[in-house]
Amino acid sequence: MGIHEALVLKIVLLSSGGVDSSLTMLMLRQRGHEVIPLHVNYGHLAEEREWKSCLAICNYLGVAQPIRIGISGLEHIPSGLTDDSLDIEKCAFLPTRNLLFVTLGAAYAYSISCRVIAIGILSNPIFPDQTMDFLQKAETCISSSLGVDMKILAPLMKLDKRDTLNLALKHGLPLKLTYYCHAGKEQPCGKCISCKERLAAEKLLTDARHNGKLRGP
Picture (cartoon, rainbow, N blue to C red):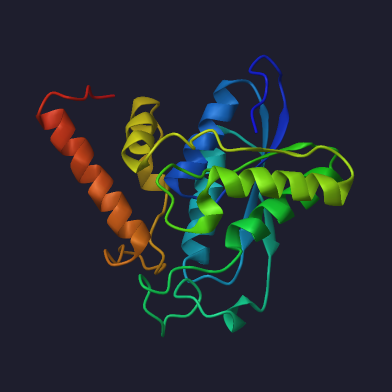
């Protein structure tokens, strides 16, 4: 899963337009890597908002125009991420979503002679496809399927949402350009897992600064 820091790499980055993938993009760019953003449209409610944010972040960071790959038919797999008739919090799990993401990322990477992909997964996973164990096994399986070594990087794996927000602010990443609500509305719903995680992290960050336990950016 790791890779030598001194190497300058071409990396396909899975970019949702959220703060985690955007911070990953910024960090990889700062280390001199060539970042190729890949956005996956899987028919989710937040797609248009996420795509708009993805374009804005890529433009702000000066990376290439993101590649947009669509997957149709996932509405047949019940999830609150794709079906607004389901509970957006209780039914948030979309089975194999991250496996689809890294598989598509690896397939595109292979097609352009790239051997590294990156994804903005954090610590404290909620679902089984957000763990280091999952990424390691996916890396092995994908490499076997392609017949070449394909590396999956997750630079934020040891960080939580508060850490990513703090780093984003520290490095001047405009959070207003990012998007995080699963409902895909102009105003975040405040009810989905992503909203609750973001709001809780913002409160912890504010409280830590107020108590002098965290320095501002």
